[in-house]
Each structure stands twice: as C-alpha cells, then as structure tokens.
Amino acid sequence: MNYVMEAITGAFRLILSLDPEVFTVTLLSLRVAVSATCVAALLGIPLAYVVATREFRGKGTLITVFNTLMALPTVVVGLFCYSFLSRKGPLGFMDLLFTPTGIIIGDVILAFPLIVGLTVAAVHSVDPRAHATAVSLGASRRQASMTVLREARFGLMAALFNGFGRVVAEVGSAMMLGGNIRGYTRTITTAIALETSKGEFAFAMALGIILLTVALAVNLLFRRFQAAAR
Amino acid sequence: MDLFTLRDLRVRLGERDALDIPRLGLEEGRVIALTGPNGSGKTTLLKVLSNLLAPTSGTVLYRGRDLASLPPAQRDEVRRELGVVLQSPYLFRSTVEGNVSYGLARRGVPRAQRRTRARRALEIVGLSGFGRRPHWALSGGEAQRVALARALVLEPAVLLLDEPFANVDAVSRSVIERVLVQENRYQGTTVVFTTHDMEQAYRLADTVVTLFEGRVHEGSMENLFHGKVREGPEGPVFDTGTLVICVPPGREGALTAAVPPETILVSLSPISTSARNTLLGRVNGVRERNGTVDVTVDAGDTIVVRLTERSYREMDLKLGMQVYLIFKAEAVKL
Image (tube, rainbow over all chains, first blue to last red; front, top):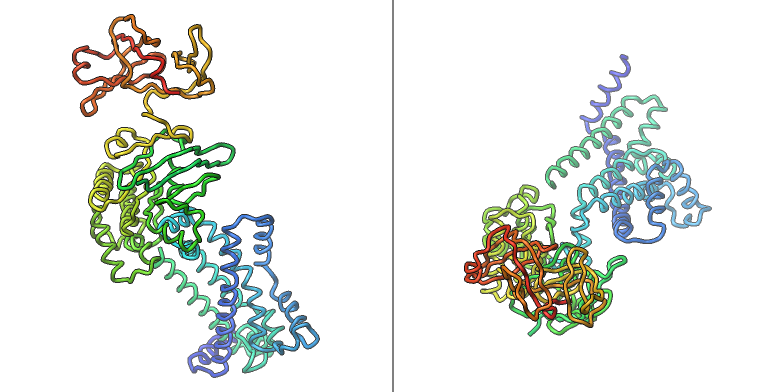
C-alpha cells in the first residue's frame, strides 16, 4: 500500500515540476492522436456520408464490415502495418517504420472504421426532410450535403471523440510501429508499459494520470459542445 | 402568361400513377390552390413544380423553359426563384434566425444583410423578437410561420406551399392567409398551395385546380362518385352501388362521375321533365356560403345542391324534409 502512495505522490511531483520527459511524451501522444483523428475524419466522413445516403448493392454488408472493424485489435493493425513498412515490405523504401508518421498510419487505420461506422449511424439519424428542405431553399447539392452533416453534428462529434479516445489510449500498434524510441516515438502508453516493466512506478503513474486527465478533458469538451449545439 | 406549363406529365410512384396530367397551365401572378382528397396527387404535383421530384415522363416548363434540360448550374439559378414550404416543415437545428437566413447564406448574402432581412421576414409573419429562440422552442403554428418566413426572405417569384394550414392554430392560420394574399397583391408573387379544404381554396385562390386520383378534375369536387358505367334499360347509367344515375353515352370506361351542384334542381314534388335523373332524398344539412346556400341531401349517397338564397327561402327547406333532385344526364361529368 505504502508503495502505491509513494508512486502517486511521485507522479504529482513529476507533473507539477513540468518534468521535460513527461512533457515530451505527452506532447507526442497528443500530436499523434490529433493528426490520426483528423486524417481518419477527412477520409472517413465523406465516405460515410456517401454510404449513408446512397442505395447500392452490398451496402448492409459494407456497414457490417465497418462495424466489425471498430473492434480491430491494435496489435493486428500493428502487425499488418509493420509488414508493409518494414525494410523488406512493399513500402519499406519510405523509411516510415519507427517514426511518429508510422504510428499515425497505424492509428488512422484504427480510427477510420470507428469514425465511418459512427458517422453512418449519425447521418442515418438525420430527418430525411433536412436534405429536401435544404434543396428547396436553394442549396446546391454540395451545400445540402454539408447541411445534413451539420444536422448530424452530435453524432459526428461523438465519432471524432471516440476515434481520438481509441488512438490516444492504444499501445499495441504504437509500440510495434513506433518502437518506443525515447524522445522520438515514445508515447504516453508505450512509456507506461516500459516504465512499469522497469519498476519506475512513479513515472508510469504520472503518465497514467495525464492520460486520464486528457480523457476527462475530451469528455468535458464533448459535453459542453453537445449542450451548446442543441 | 403561364408561369408553369405541364405537358403529358406522368409520375409513377411504385405501382400506380400518382399523376397523369396531359396539359395544365398555371398563370403568373395568381393565387392558385391545388385541392383534392388525400392521395389525389396534390403534394406530388407541388413537389414536381418545386423541382424536388422529377416526373417519370413529360415536361414541366417554368417560364417556357424545361428545367430538366438545363445544365445543373443554370437549373440551380432558376430553382432559386422558387420559395418552397414543405408539409410539416423541418427546422434546422439552429435558432429561428439561423433558419430564416439559411437560404440567404447559401446565396452568399453577407451576414449583416442576412440579419436585417431575416428580421423583416419574421416581422411579416408576426414573429418579431423570435430570432434568438432555438428551433425546438416553437409551437406547430410558429414553426410553420418560421418556415414561411424562411421562404419569404428569399423574395421568390413563386411561393409553393404544401398544406400550409394543416395542424396550425387559428392565429397562425389567419397570419399565413394574410401573408399569402399580401405577397401576391403587393409583391406580385405567384402563390401555389395545396389544401384539402375546398372552402379555403375558393376563398383564397383565384384559380382552383382540383385533383382526383392523379388527374385534374374539371369542375368542383362536390358530388364526386366512384363506380362503374353499365348499360341500363334506357341507355348508360353510372352505378355507385348505392346510387344509379343516367349519364350521357360514349364514356364506358369512366370510374368517377361528378354532378355540379349548380345544375341540380330541387323540387318538393315529382315533376315531369325532360331531365332523365330524378332522385328522392332527405335534406340532412344546410350551409350558407357567400350569397348561395348549399343543401346536402341524402339520396343513397350524399349530394350537394347549390341554391340561391332567395330560392332557398322560398322553398322553406328544413332538415329531414323529403325532396326530389332533378338533373339532366348531360350534366353528369364522367
């Protein structure tokens, strides 16, 4: 018990003293998660809109596939990307393995199906009259689509925050693709795994607390947004 | 000049013809009511006119131009002359002002100007000071008026409204009626609206287009019967199951028949006449409408007869009285 308390007090000391190591790791984690979420959203939201609003053969199957991929294990994504990015892999020439970009690629693949799946559901939940109303008021096709997405903004935000939550907290893919290189590809989660195995509980605990705080902040932001957007 | 010209218009929805209109012109600068019972195609026609539904075949000309054949950019341009209010309007998740200025924003009107124009439009529909209200804090009638303001603010050449008076409180209804008439009179806006209320249609509109089973029905919708033409002992008759009336020859396939209320004579005793239809019935309703009196008679089916106030008074008709209805076979429209 004593030593848990020691770890916690040590964690706060590290956070309050703005320990450069803790700071670097946190910054990288946020940078990677934000970039991956943005890229996945830019690719996923338009695709989800098309899937949700068009009728085509295999639509149901496609949605099921995305919903299944939401639970894609992070190590599987790590493994898959590793085989592509490693020296011998087809994309080996790009030298992306063990770089922050490598981690982002894995995270995009993790966040993408989540964002697509939740966005499809969000667009489905918009009243079909929204599109007709937009068109009847002179909106072009593009403007009408944007209006429907805006009407779906609760669900859209949920998709983004969930995507962000998934990638900021995952460790498997970041470990395999980033390699946990200190000061370069070490993220909060990979650092926690390493420090714990080294017995540096205070440091691991500090990072754990920061991660939870990030999750809390994101949630609070989401709640506020929902209240404002009502 | 006709604002809308329809030619050989057909709209199929699923298995049935929702609309089948060989020819129809709607004149510019008028108030036009589209009426008819539920499922008669009035909403479908309004959607076709609003460019929200493409006809299965045939053409819709707007100011002589076929919108379907225009390139998309030009079509959008023309479409923006139309102000459309759909049935049970959808309000965007925004404030009232956000809703009213929606179309202006899509047209690139600067923010300050949007605000002033939205305020003016809200004033017209009697909702000054509602601008900041959220979309969900409105009654049905208020929502309908916001939707009307949202179309008015665009200063359209035509206002197209689907059942603007359905599910609306009395105050909102009179506001909407007033606004439609004013827009038509002072702005020259052509107003096209659907309603199932015949009386309202005749009161507000210069032109009433009555639809029945997807077709334009000549004359009014009163005394409209479903049935079949068959051969009777003295020529063709129209049989509704409860009523048999003599009809002019040559329209064997007809499924509906209408008897204009003005063409029916009422008599308290049977009279000998060249008219082939004499029906015995009982008066079960009397209604006054500007200068004339509508008497409804149960003669197997309910039949409306339109009398002048004077002849109504002279005949001294009372509820429950037995009367004879007399009309020519030629008066029946098949």
